[in-house]
Image (cartoon, rainbow over all chains, first blue to last red; front, side, top):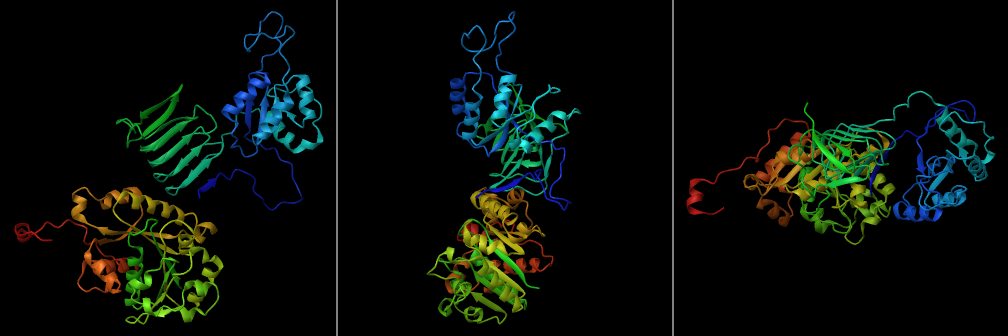
Length: 275
Length: 271
């Protein structure tokens, strides 16, 4: 029995005319950046690192821009595992990747950085093209995924600096057994976070009170996320999956004091904050 | 306007039932029409502490299941005519508590113009405890000065702010009061117990009173008398202070300072 409060940055119904409206919206999506076109290698790695699921049918964009491509004749393929056929790396089996992701409760909605052939296959699979740059002329998306395509397309159109992610603010104490998750942004807590409570954010976690429970920043891998506390007494500190428990007592210069926690490579740094 | 007060703690054996009995009795002593309900279905003992064990014929579950009328199950206290007890069933378990039934019982009590309904919660965080707190307007969270009890109280405070009717409907939050029982200032000085400051630092919930550790509580339970009735005891005085503070009176905290044994006791020993 976990008390879960979720960010309400989703859709909210309001009185409006008509049965629908078209709006330009931005959505946070997961991106799966593939580094290898070798399906068996990817499948094994996926099973080892993410295969146990835990995704909640979240949309994901398959980013193919980092795949080792058949390079121009002059440049040798620097990346890649095995000696490849001289006429370029084996094409990625996009269909299999999609099936693999769906089996792990992810919903592939689009591909990015795809070649023309991959794009054609993507359209066949009901995926849209989420190009980062001004898109080359592209075929109309298939009908089945019209809504999804719209979401992705919007993300490409925005040229302004990225809008600030929504910040979630909590002003009542978080007690044992309570958990707050700020999806896609920062979490600011203005009251104490007690032992047994969990504060989780995709961005940074700020606690302007004693932080005694578990603090997890960069829950989706943002290594620049930080944890700030007015009094650092946390049971667990984690940034982008690198964690530390209270089994090793906190260093004296930060324990019970204003402090920030940040990630330096693979290491959590704890620094006192002087106000 | 009837107020519903839940007496809860999370941890067992900290003094919920003792507190419910004394608190309800204290309200009735002030002339307020009060009903105390035992939600600890299956392990009832409020009726024992209230000294009405032999008068229990029907209980809360009978009323919740609409088998009898509420008035048939209400037991009137022998000393205070404003005090009523609704016992729990010994033979059923907590799953027999249905939310609609509980709500109906509370509504009927409101219609009978009770000033206060005191709900004695079972230990734990399961159905019984959730039912007892669900309709609460205010809560007395009973804590002993030791770490596990304080942690459990923290959990319960979290549930009061998220699982109660008021929390779910987004109304005004349940008003929380912290009551520390079995407090022994001498053992706090010796470092064996958490101090009031330690507890406040962890829970940050307004303190409504401190009940000193005392033999007379055990004595009162065995006699079937709410501890607040024991004349000239610290416990009874402390509970009277709690009731006074609950009703908005300003009372300084008592029984929180360590008492040095007198030279007489130091020489001759004894307690």
